Length: 59
Image (tube, rainbow, N blue to C red; front, side, top):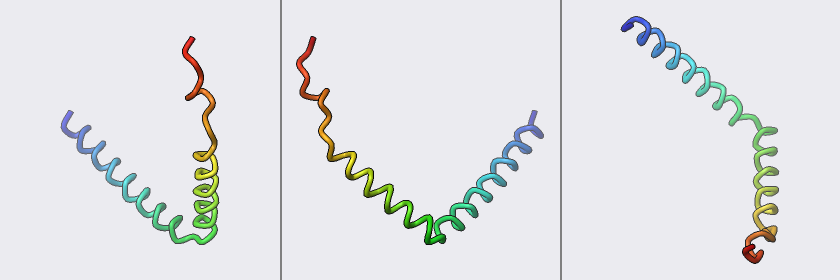
């Protein structure tokens, strides 16, 4: 059982390293940054839309 935990822990560490590296690569990509800015602008527009169900009378 202990060796299984060690193996699992090692796999998790390796995945975390790969994820961290992938994030570094993506964050340095200018095209990705541009897309993130566009998504942020879209999100702001969506947040500004009134939600009609908030003011709806209770049934």
